[in-house]
Each structure stands twice: as structure tokens, then as C-alpha cells.
Amino acid sequence: MTLNDTLKTYLDKRILWVFLMGCASGFPWVLIASALAAWLKDAGVSRTEIGLVGIAYGIYAFNFLWAPLVDRVNIPSITRIGQRKSWILLTQAAMAVLTLVLATVQAPGEQLALVGMLIFAIALFSATQDIAIDAFRVDHFSYGHQASIPAASAMATVGWWAGYSFPGYFAFAYADMVGWNTVYLMLAGCLGAFMLATCLVKEPITDREALQREIESHYLQGERSRSQRIITWLTVTAWEPLADFFKNHGLRLAILILVFIFLFKIGEAFLGRMSIVFYKELFTNEEIGTYQKLYGGLATCVFALIGSIINVRLGVTRGLFIGGVAMAGSNLLFAWLAMAGPDKSILLFAILTDNFTTAFSTVAFVSFLTALTGKAFSATQYALLASIGNAGRTVLASSGGWFVDWTGGNWPLFFVLTALMVIPGLLLLVFIRKPLEQISTHHKDSNG
Image (tube, rainbow, N blue to C red):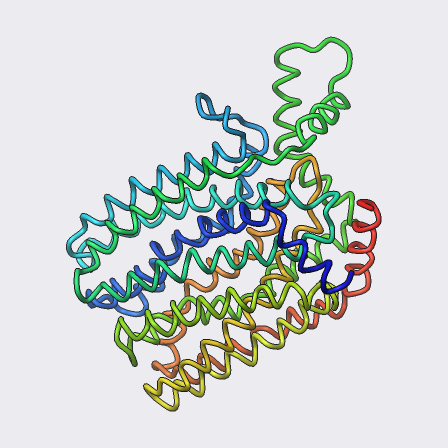
């Protein structure tokens, strides 16, 4: 594919829809992660407690458990707008209500249990939204549009960071002027805008339901009683997506793929979880908003587009390896910043480098997961793969605050250790590189 052909893929209007849904996917992390960490820090909550509140994010690691419902269940009344869209709209409405309730909490340090429960509920609906949004993108581009996968992955990444960074910038920019409660009221309004965007995008057209009925017919033999139909529905819904994945890749390779997905972004996750807490010890809210959210967000959007073009030429596995090495290197820059102190030039350099490596590796990672996803159970299989990656990013990284305290607040050591966390995933990638390249080639050939 020529450079001109690659650029033409961005003219597809579905790319815009993927971007809008990517924004909706990234936005909840402003509510439950960056803005919350700063709010709790300002309220005098300890690093360990801030990290532990992040245990609520662990729900993202388990969203594959109810992903089959998103694949198979139509929501009454609003399903006429489309199965994927109806699930997205419902979760956004729930998050808007919960955010309004969170905005009424006047002393988060004294009501940490309540804050934790609200954050968990927002994370639950956000994780469900992610199931539907990922399936929305996969259904539009995975099969028959192989060449567009990196572009769609890039725009999903651009959208995620736009939805996370720019609202986050305004949150930090105005927090000192209007207070965090007012900031959360404004953020609730943003969810209303995302609900409007969800109504405007087009539902993907697939043969998913026909494939699911065909699979069900293999289980149903002879007379179809009500109990038999229920058991078959549950079997196809809960078991078949997992069985299909292992059947397509073989038990040994499938397990190695899942282990790699778990390991790949752990170092980045530990850094990301505690980055705001680290910044707060050196810089003001306005400085954090300007450098980390505004400049970093813009850089990520640009770098994601560049990363998609590079990944088309290098291939997904090479892109993953280069992205992993770059992630480790960028973590070391934060160790330099920790030793240098509140130096804005080093801060900018570290953030730009980190956002480049994050964007590049994320585009490759999302393309990789998309290539592994089947047609009949796109929501369930993608959620299974993504949730395994989220397990490291959410559950393990929740100990980040304790980890920093364990080092005696030695931030340089913490960042060096996060860089070393990347190595196991890279070694495993080298080991399974050839079969992964064969999967990518087969997937491409099967789609013409």
C-alpha cells in the first residue's frame, strides 16, 4: 500500500465515527483517574489511599464477563437505534447521573468510601461502554477492511486521548478558580454532548446475528423445547466466544498471546496511575493542565496518526516491539525529571516523549487485538483480550501508591522499576513473533 492509499483511508466517514466514540471512551478516565487524583490530593488524601481508590478501575479487567450480553441482548425501547449504539447511550446516561452525584461530595477526604463507590459505579458503566464502543469499531472495520484497521485504531487512539486530555485540561485549568465540585458539574455536561454524538453516528451493518443463529443450530437437535433453547442460548453466549478463540489459535499459542497482552503495558500503567500524584508534588494544577493535558493531548493525537502510517509499513509485531522499547525509555525520562525537580523544559520533553511512545504502541496494540477478533462475537472476544490487558493496567497498578511509599517516596527508583517491567513482555513477543505474523497474514488473505 502506498502512502497515498494509506492517507485515503482517513477519508472514510466511519473514521469520524470511530473518533467520536473514542472520545467517549477516554472521557470517563478524567472523572475517575486524573481529576479525581488531583481532587483527592488537594483534599489531603495520602498517596497510598489515592492508589487504593484506583482498585475500582479493576472492573475494566472483568468486563469480558458481561460482554456476551452486549453481543446478544437488545435493550428494550432504545434498541431501534442499533444494538451497539443503544448500549453506549444507556451507559453514558448512567455515568452522567453518577457524576452529578459525585459533584455534591464536599469533603472527599472524609467521605472516601462514598467516593470509592461512586467511582466504582462510573467505572462499571464506562467498562460496559468500552465493550460496545470497541465492538462498534471492530464491526465497522475488522473484516473486509484489513487495510483500514491501523487507521481506525489510530483514530480510536486519537479520540481516546482527545476525550481524556482536553476536558482534563479545562478541569485542571479551572479547578483552582471554581473548585472541583463545579468542575465535576461541567464534566457531567460533557457526557450530554457525548450522548448527542452517539445518536448521530451510524450503527455498523454486519452478519453477526446470522452467524450466531447458525452456531446455535449446531447445538439444537431434534425438537426444540423451551429449556433446550435457553441452554443453547446460554452456551453460545457464554462459552462459544472463548472456545472459538482457542480453536482458531490453538491452546498453547492462545495462552501465550493472553500472557503477552497482560504483560505488555504494565510498566506504562504503573507510571500512568501515579503520574498526577507525582506532578502535584512539583507543579500547580494549571501547569499540569497545560503541559500534561493540553500539550500532551495534542502530541498524542498527532503521534497516533504518524504511528498508524508507520505500523502499516512495519507490521503489527514490529510496531509492538518498537513501541515497548520506546515505553521503557520514556519512563526513564520521568526518573530524570524526578531528580531534576520542577523543571518545565524537562517536564515538556518527558511528556511529549511519553505521549509519542504511548500513541505509537497503542495503535499497534489495538490493531493487534482487532486482528485476533472473530466476526460472530466481536464484542465478547475483543473485551476478553482488552480486559486481560486492563488487568495489569488497573488491578496491579492500583498498588502504585503503596509502591512509591515502599521506596520511601523515591520517585527516580520507582520510574526505573516501571521501565524494567516492560522487559518480560518484549521477550515473550520475540518468542511468539512468527506465529503472530502468520495470523496477521491469514487474516489479511481471508479478507481479500
